[in-house]
Image (cartoon, rainbow, N blue to C red):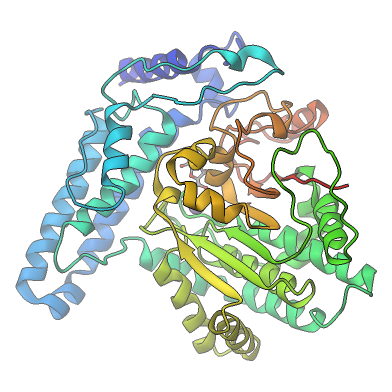
Length: 489
Ligand SMILES: O=P(O)(O)OC[C@@]1(O)O[C@H](CO)[C@@H](O)[C@@H]1O
Ligand SMILES: [Mn+2]
């Protein structure tokens, strides 16, 4: 295993050597200090996630028999066998296999599998310079421990989806559904506290600038901290928001290593009060919006995180009067806890049935917004490709065009952050605006807790402080960033 370990690292190093700083540490030391998280996350975390799926499927046996009879049970056994095979292929570093089902994303996926490390647009970056060397493919055939981390992880979830998509009775099976629903149910207290807070404060107006600004910040920070609750970081174990997050905001704020919350609020107020003047900001290569017509949430996890995002969205609708809010979610079960179509609708149903008057009120309000076309739930295959976002304009120009209509796109979570920043182990002090490699659809921000070793845009002092606080600061989910690309002032 150790040989595979080194081989895996060598392959990564091969592809990334031009930018990887020579720290003089060997691989084990690097993992210890929280860098090179790729290897343990594939080796340790994914097999646990796959094993958990097998357990869940065994438990679903009665339900499947009741619904589909013996034919359903045969399919369930086949499903379990395929998941076990996937786990064994991972553990023995087998080459990836092509997708066989006829889906809109099959061809794109098979291209990525066949030419795994091809980077069409090498990053051009003037500062620091090491990124100017284009990546080339070191291996024509990807396998679990020789491909890029992003491809290997995304491939795992796409392969799980393949198993459902090629079955008859279990076509719509989401193996993470139970975990996601339980996570929401167990966060009830925190969700009720947040809904009371929202309902008792949402009647303020922008004229009452102190209250409206404080409310915006509280809701935005809550949405950031909601991102702690992902079930992939805990390999599917419960990872819920149990306590009242609002009581902890001051403490939580102190863990935000780069905090653009004030900038974001000021930008939105400028637009709302018609004071935004198109200036010649040389760093902005898109046409900035001068109105507040549209906000986009690129969602991450279901459960408490989704609820916290909806509360922030309510602020945009109620206080800023934003006409359209788009919620982008995943088309297949993804990274255990990401929001799918079913999670979205189930969450509103659960709110109505929860027994809480506040949740009932909010569910009715939000369903009315959906009904009226103010809130729009949407999916796109691009979100479940292994592509970083600099490729969006060429791979999914329709999606890029949609985002360019937005006043502000909010990317939630760690995986979106990795994709925004090209999923490289940047020097954390590199400027956020410099790693985007042409990804400039519109003004945007990232709200993310740190759960992987990709980080940019923080000061040397912030890095030092975090490192002193805990060795695994980059992957623990304790620290966070709020980072933005904005045209004004
Ligand atoms: O995107 P999210 O839900 O915030 O986090 C997803 C995550 O748990 O999965 C990956 C590792 O498996 C990391 O990017 C991150 O830690
Ligand atoms: Mn997620």
